[in-house]
Length: 614
Image 1 (spheres, rainbow, N blue to C red):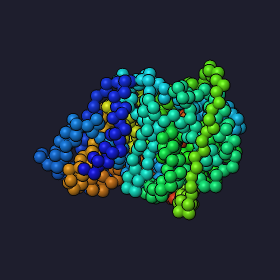
Image 2: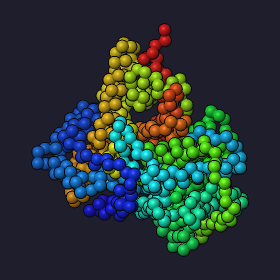
Image 3: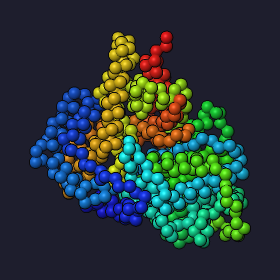
Image 4: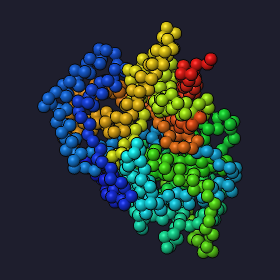
């Protein structure tokens, strides 16, 4: 019952207000996959990861779980019953388990950053002009969402669930001692009318609508941003936003202390209620062009440290737009509410909007001064801030970020050979990992489940028997070129099949999680299959991968899921591919730069295999 209550309290309430939006298409409910199918595919996914004796042991355990009239059947029936009576049988549990119950800091460990192509300005004046345009673009997008004018998106000819779009605005994650929850203040009418702007660690409430509900013009917003700049010349001594970068349990305790003061409570509520947050970052030290992309991605991901711009963040906020004075900009988003595809749609709208000139002339109406948000910092909160600063700097120094633009070819090359570009890149990532570590590892790629009502994401597991055979054979001179090409095509085809299965709601990870949580829901002991070392190994994802679904030269970046792992993000364009690779310096076995260089050579070697030089 505990999980059920938490889910209802945290998510279902906010969904009810939006789930039947006029613009939401009729999408089918997410299916519960057949039990036998999931268990068979689970065992197959373990084959490249486990030695034969351990695999045999796990086979027996799975057999006992799935026996006729046994525990597996009972839990499967429970999930099917749940599917008939809920909006989505797994999404609430997934958000709770994957995000809200995690105690890791949101910075680095959870929230993805997207760094976008550099704009043509190099000082604070250009920064504020662009910031005003960006705010107008986001307000224009929100107006489309609220009015139901946002076109329904399609994938493979099927409409996608559009529920997430209204939840992007005026939402925020709130820390708790054991689990977090999400608050959502947005309403299509009479919702919050302000954004939060943060500069030099100081937060401001900026109203972006007139009293009649019309948005401010770009020039009005620009004038207000200039007023904020004039009120925030000096860096605030106490960067209150740093607290949101803490371990969730620690931040939860500090949050309760902070809100005991009425002034603090009002300020925090205004940040949480704001449509989104705009971070106006201070200049950072110049760096070589070669290292610029890596540093920029890191700046948006975590702010660069307590002596840089990390105090200019409220990591709990669903949407944070970051704009530097050097033309750099990007977005940091919190995953309990937002995810890649809707965010990509928003960014595409911003980029298209920014190409248009402003048509509206600003009315000569005096606007109220943007309101600075004040905080009363007592000795206990001051101590919390000092600890948060130390811990964040340790985390930032531990993270190794390497971004590179692979320019030898892009997604058109594998397409011409009838190979899926995503499968092709996953092959290269697996080969690179195998070359570095002489083994394959549990790897997760992300599949969107928006073809289904309330669907979020499931995992696609890269390391297959075919992927292992390909990686082992690739550098073996005894294997002919023809045989290697055949192994490559088999591995790519298998990965494409796994992708199709996940997109159709037939992946294994959500189903396995559902069976485990259904047992807890029914007050039963966790089935032994989930206590098995094989399940622990299968869910210890040393490779976390993700594709940026955009047509722009953007770079996505996030930290590894485990201390001895990597995260690899990629954005394939027609003739080049952007990559970001992260790892933790504290782990001697992993090195982001080394994996990045190996990945680059793996891509070149695979091209050479498929298209040998004459």
